[in-house]
Length: 102
Image (cartoon, rainbow, N blue to C red):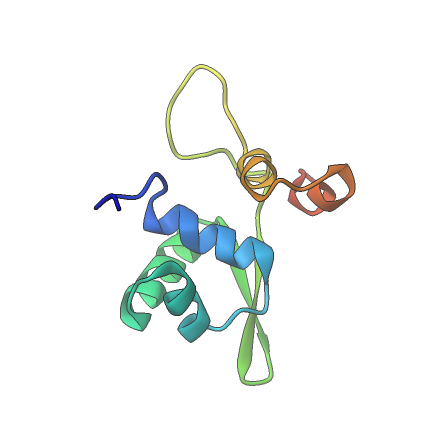
């Protein structure tokens, strides 16, 4: 098995949230193979960058991906977070509606 991953931990956390917006930090950590502290740091990075918005729901958080935002890379064709998530999740047209720009 390879000692590296095709996707960064930030991308893997974003995919985890895309699959389950109600996911707990402990579950993000378990699903992505990082510590809870690292998962917290990544979610904080994504929140501060504006890629996700956290909403309090009782004692839990619910995450909303800001799919209309471009990827942070600079290239000639700007891709949005939603386009990449739709590609990686293999979602059909109906399911990708949640990842499209408002």
